[in-house]
Length: 54
Image 1 (cartoon, rainbow, N blue to C red):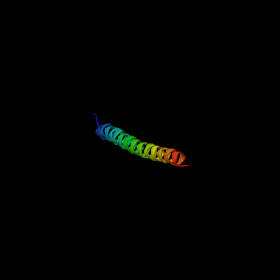
Image 2 (cartoon, rainbow, N blue to C red; image 1 turned 45 degrees about the horizontal axis):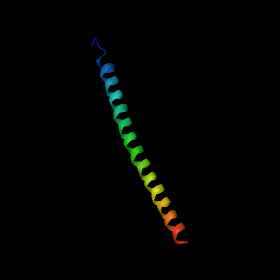
Image 3 (tube, one colour; image 1 turned 180 degrees about the horizontal axis):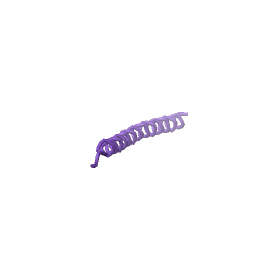
Image 4 (tube, rainbow, N blue to C red; image 1 turned 180 degrees about the vertical axis):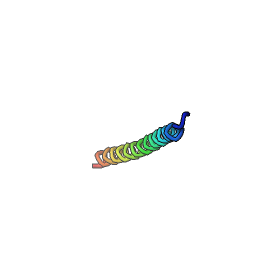
């Protein structure tokens, strides 16, 4: 690598860390979104139950 191996492998390492970090962030965002949608669904369900009981 002509003496530039440290920079080449360092670049690969930084790219790998960024890709893994992005995957982790996507999964966390998906989990948060599903949790919020579940809460919205539950509250909507409760509102409909309260409307029919009134």
